[in-house]
Image 1: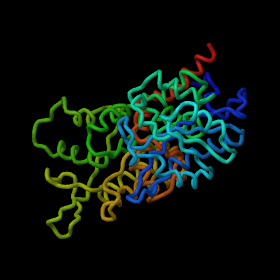
Image 2 (image 1 turned 120 degrees about the vertical axis):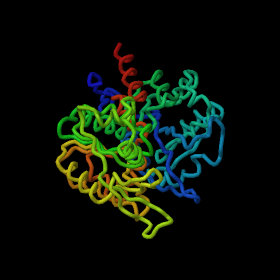
Image 3 (image 1 turned 135 degrees about the vertical axis):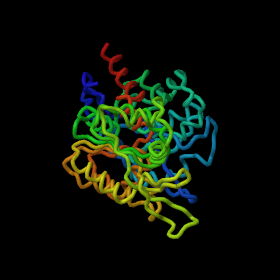
Image 4 (image 1 turned 120 degrees about the horizontal axis):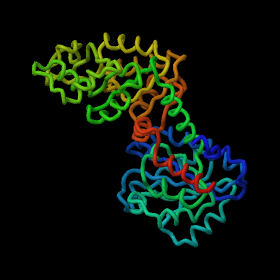
Length: 399
């Protein structure tokens, strides 16, 4: 990718953006309250820099986004119209919402008549079945409304969807500010992992993280285990059965390249006991115990490992951090990472970002990713379909 310096829209000095129709893929799939109030506007704020840049260059901005999973059918409960006013307040531009299913002439006329203080936003792109199933025909149709394509939707760039990997086949394509920051920040971490690095992984179960755990074994000094995975490691370690050499956890624990950090103690919740929350050592855990957080000895153990690390990757809370009775582990990990201001630290995943916003601030880390699944896939594979599409676009332009 370093061979193509103009993959970033800001570096594209050869293109005059004045009056150019710029299709910008964004991700406004934000969590909403029952009253349609945006609960987390991080992804909307993240693309403002790209939009401001384009407007300053007198470009015409056309946004493409999705919301939820309408499965290719129009669903007014998932209409972007529900959050249009909130988006306008955040971006500080008036938005003209257009249904892509309208007559071509109506859409083109609306784009041509756009005012200087307005931007276009197409209605939920997933109302169209061709978006998720992928269609060259639909991708070409979408590209017909623009002169330039800009991907600023890192969180969905692991999808082979028409608006992600299709449009770059037909018009010049670039990364927006947020997308480019995601690429460089995560690539920087991946290229510098070594003896003084640690990965902290939470998660519901081992099957959700097995691929990424295996991927980082041999690349980092430590991998710390948290979240729902603790129970599976505890069950394995406390079992009196002869170890199965084909067992996933057995292989992870017995690798010779990376030290796996296992909790020394945990917080157990039991509604039938007083107090409701108790601390147990790992070897005291019973099969039926409900683990909701790491314990005080583990907090100290993990925090000391974070303190001496120069590269830190965090994905997944340590427990049920939304509850004040079980948030001490996640809070402590977040604060330990924030205190180590000499380390290069990257975090990602929906719950992880929520925890960062709750206990520290994104500025306390080197980079906080807007992606969940995309973040995980990127650090697993070193690239994403949405990134590859832009690289291929550049190759096609230079050939």
